[in-house]
Image (tube, rainbow, N blue to C red; front, side):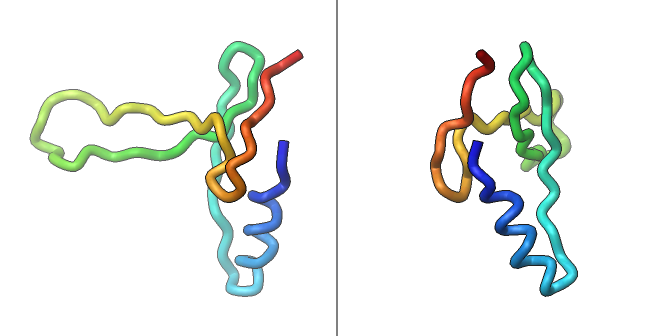
Length: 66
C-alpha cells in the first residue's frame, strides 16, 4: 500500500490540519472508507457507502489480502 495519506497529512500538519480516513475491514482487507451524504435529506433511504479500491492521490490499487 502507498504512503500518500501519511505524506498528505505531513504537509497539512504545517497548517494544523489533517485528512480523516476511517479504515474498514471487510473480509480481511483494510480499506479506506469515503464518507458520503445525501443530497436531498427529505428523500427516504440512507446515503450509499463508498470504499476505495485505489488511492485517491496516486491511483495505486490497494492490495488484496494474501
